[in-house]
Length: 437
Image (cartoon, rainbow, N blue to C red):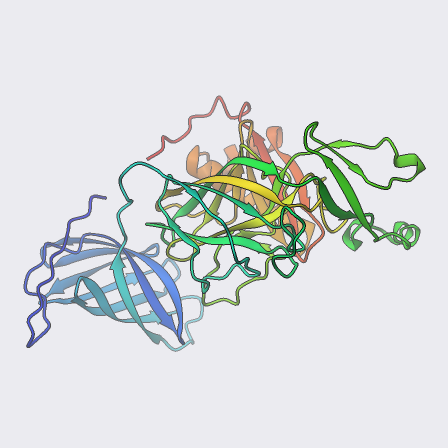
């Protein structure tokens, strides 16, 4: 929707808006919940004194007169948001009363809020930023200061430490536990949008990696666990950077000729979580991305993440030289890496969980405490993708899944299990995709 600029001229005596050209446009409301901010998207359309509103999906009507704004928006289960506010210095400031439809006995509660117009996407030529990190973060937090501000379309060239905090020379630069490079603030990225991360180049920058020789408990039955009782030791791997191969440095008799091709990947890529929640550590994953450990988040892939806070605040790290499905040893071939990424934004779209795309497939993540629940989330995530972009009915989604679904277990090592549902783009060729806006 085309936004109309609003000019605010406040009188010193009354602070009332003397002249404006309309409230029509998209706004982000920052609502104070006991000192913690929550972000709500608000779209207004003004016709004279009449307002129509979409308040984070809830529709309603209201008025704007004499510098004062009022509307009532309702959800589909009997809940509502009643808002009263004034316009001050181009911002909407006031109170919102929430009534719960799912819990009618719950007393309405009042929260203060401030709404600001969503910023315009910057214009101009994209830039490439050479970034030299000096600090690495251990939480996907919205409270860390950004290390760099970048525009949509810009490229970042930087590097990561390994999961233990060591750099390309083996020097310890951080405490271990998947320390992250970032966060990067993306100008004009707002809650309710999608952050698009194109992985252009992943380059190993040292000739060794660290891993283990065990199998995580979620991957074993009792009999195998007994047989594996002496495993769980660290293993150092040699990385042949010229030939692109990895091999254990001190193999046993039966492993002396074992080599695997390297396939560099990022174990972690995330946006910051809502500041009203406890920030997850860098060993966790969820709707924000995080420690997904999916071995197709590699060079040439694009990752889609639902933005939770202004600027998105992009983190990445936990470089792997190669990893099998599930990260069954509890780690991968952990190393450091040079990383080149390009970022962009899809405004007004917000996937429930991360999505990945490469040249051959679209892929939907599911992450939960069990493989069963993660599978259900991946299935729902992909169903929403097909309904949104291809406008398929639920029945049609079922037919696509029944003939084209490919499930991968991405993660069993951490608190959440991960399952990915893949659909081949070749199978989707006959469907009509909704044109990009």
